[in-house]
Image (cartoon, rainbow, N blue to C red; front, side, top):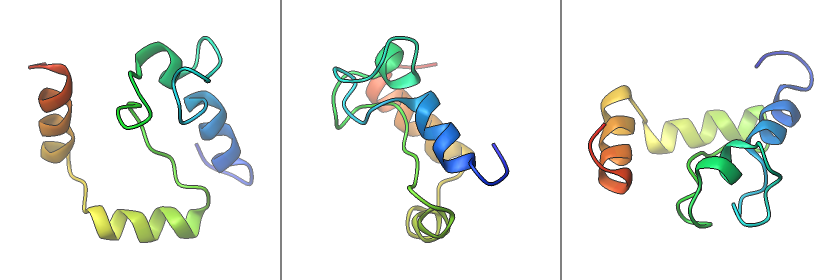
Amino acid sequence: YEGEEAVEKIRKVLGETNPEEAAPGTIRKDFGRTVMMNVAHAADSPASAKREMAIVRVGDDDIKRVVEEYYGKV
């Protein structure tokens, strides 16, 4: 997502952090298990996203490893 309301749009698609509280049809409701295993993270602002990406240094291999660790081999 891009543009002025990108943060709000992606957070709406993801749903509440707790999958049990997320609306049906959202990513976290459909695929999340718990608050700690809620499938996805979304920063609350562009500045937070930049800061968090620098901390975590997430790459394609990292994402695959996390998915395999929590959900089994893909």
